[in-house]
Image (tube, rainbow, N blue to C red; front, side, top):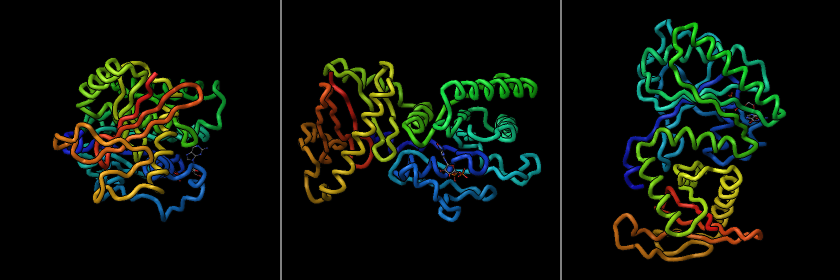
Length: 313
Ligand code: GDP
């Protein structure tokens, strides 16, 4: 994990048309804003969206990723030379393109296809992730039909452009449930070179400690950086994510500065591996037993970043 902190941060570019939900997504995921409050997001409080003088802006200094939001005003033309596409796409790990599924999306798709074409000329290594967003208001059938339609139109259009080899992943998302966190987790995981090692470590933990499922979380964003290789079921992710909220809230109210003390948590155990340098910070841990017999165990790995959350059987 300390190597993760030292490594270059994965860079994400969030694009989409106005009102597609970009500011809401970044506020909910990275600033713990309650979804209903995004209704009142003013344009003045939004994140920097200047498309010409691009500077990467880290929204979370304590996190391990860089993140930039980019609006798609109607008149943008990638070919007119206004944009330094090398700066824009050169270092980007993933482009997240947000499409409002509750609105007409043909124009958004045209923009997406133009963007993919421009990307292909500058950085073919970028992962292209399409968030089919605001699906909370749609029935299951309609969601899948919309996804099918978007995939089909994009596949056809890219084939016409001679870009049939481009791989795109699609995610159905909403800020009103955990789907947006889940989608971000998948996007981030693909950008971490250490993923295989982390997964192996978690596999070892799970089999040696008879644990049902283990996640490695970035607590502040509730994005999971890695998990063991058993399939993720959404419910266990959701419950772990809710548990993090509870622990963070309790820590905020009853915790105190660990710089001056060795303990600061609700339920506390002191680290037994404090001898190594990376582990010398006091860790925080918490256990919760649920009515259905499930036990949630959270253990922090380093002071600011990623705790481990596991559900022993
Ligand atoms: P931006 O211009 O792309 O940054 O879009 P905003 O973040 O300002 O969002 C525009 C509107 O969409 C706001 O009223 C949000 O509350 C709403 N919105 C964002 N995400 C969702 C979602 O997942 N579901 C629903 N129903 N509305 C959303």
